[in-house]
Image 1 (cartoon, rainbow, N blue to C red):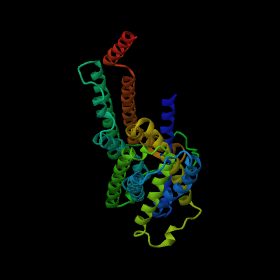
Image 2 (cartoon, rainbow, N blue to C red; image 1 turned 45 degrees about the vertical axis):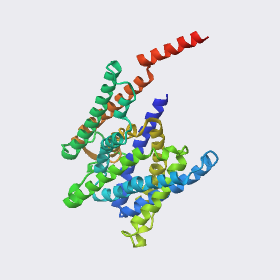
Image 3 (cartoon, rainbow, N blue to C red; image 1 turned 180 degrees about the vertical axis):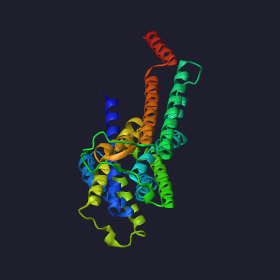
Image 4 (cartoon, helix red, strand yellow; image 1 turned 135 degrees about the horizontal axis):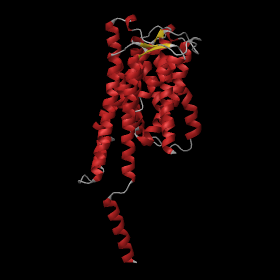
Length: 366
């Protein structure tokens, strides 16, 4: 039951992020500044989370020492803030389809960062006796499955980047929203130089997101996850504001109107930064950062489905094939993690002998 709950929460997180790519691009296409967009989504997230954090955790939250508070500040400075600002700028230079596809590089980057910091994967090989027995073969099987999953994810990302293929005609031309027959990606509307710059910035944004996923172990030392998430949003609001000031000195660009920009800011601020970030922290606390990052391909799949059926966008064959490769990589990693959990919960031969000796010694003492 607990595993089902974790999977359901992960799927919900990815569905929220699919809406992020679609609504964010709509706001930027409507003329909203990329830097202002990043500030407002963080501000709305802080205003949304602060009352909940105060009401829910004001009595249970432990004291927050200055050292831990400073760590959360650094976590925002090197994780949340640059990731969101760079994402907004890169999305303005590219497209929603590319941004959704590029986020699939996060599992690969998180895998490398996690191993570098000694979390997950290979570290599990050191947790058990590495003598030649059946358990060692199981551990190497887990390692092979995880590495294979990462390679499949990378292959799917590269396939989508370099192969578009023919468009798949919609089965139903009476879409719920928008008009059928449109493409989600128009690379020729941007100069090649701007497109390359946006792609490069998107890669950096994903790298900082990977670093944030792994280094959240700092904030998770604080038991109140909601308060920790609120503090990260608060710190990032001020940080992104001072970053935006040199680029947007005309305060008329900071005005919000009754348009897609306001809708997107509310959605990204409250649903994405408020709800999704808190759910991510919960998943990381339960299963670790690599597990969460490996579910990233679901965002692309959900995005394609929504664009195809709701907005009537044309979907190319390359997106479908790349999505299939990413799903294979996702389930390969999940299979490896499942096998690892079963091995950890199953007592080894040494554990059984130790337990038997303890029982015998206890009987003899009696």
